[in-house]
View: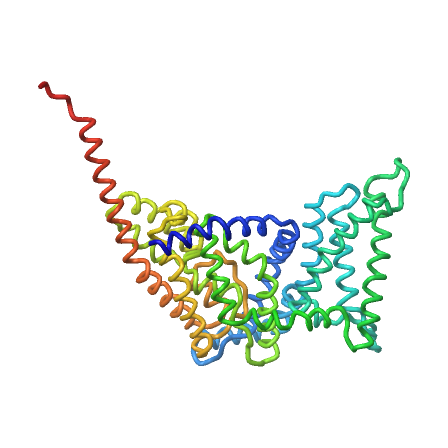
Length: 446
């Protein structure tokens, strides 16, 4: 137990304070919230891509699916994907700048104007119009509007509000008379930042052009090792370990870690979707649904199996928490069991809380590496029940078998610790029951 106590103390004294500062850091929050704002487009777009690509033929369901796709027209189904998931970095550039400007709350800096300027700068950096002649005229290339442009979107989203704030604080602005309406005055405040961003982007692109690069390709070249490293088992296991340690300290681990690695996972998703559309082998494993639906069945820690055991517990406390937590757990919401049991800062559950997800991670990674299940190509809502979400995200029915395996393994790992805690609570409940009976019994004369 000394090792467990030492680990708990380390998490509480070192990791938790750092994580708390990271989680509240305004730039990281802006990035996280900016990407979250794109989620409706990502979810709908990626699911349409899955629908447009039936996993095969050979039975009535798959044959019918193919017939429906052919009847509607594959291009009609995939079209919304290209203007949702296909250009999500453009939406992110707007969302990140908007959220950061809102957080900075600088007088004279409109969040909406910041978002628009960020999106303008992003498009100028990654997708300058190309003349193709003929009836099409000029077109905007899409190569870096999706996952490949995520880092450029982050830079634009953070740079623009910071630049606007700097210009306002230095009083470098076009001042309008007080009689001019506020919205018109705000639009004139944007003129100088627009010119500055044009100069910055065009000068950098001009310099990089001498090396056959532009801002987007240069940034991706710099981050290529990081993107490659993100799709390794080490990165996968480390992310899961950090999530679990933070949750054990009472901090929303998925939110903290997800805010940092989210852009990398979206790039991986974009690479898989691009490969699916081109008919190539899917390259990436580590994408959000792999954690949401395979490793964390029932929420962080993979607690749904534990909830099922608790619902049938002899302990009144555990039985009540188990019954209350079952329905939320089916939708991957496990705060009731995490804080109600409690698991947070409970030494009895420290080992299974860490071990169960890591063992599941090994199983899931092996299943993907051995091609037992197709890699992720869609991004269903994380509240989707695990077997359904796993099947939808991979377009593979065998994914449900892997989910069931992880559910069973989590239950086996949690079981002995659950029984030990149940025994402890039963003894406590029995003692309290006897104390209550003694307090209620009539006093006898001596």
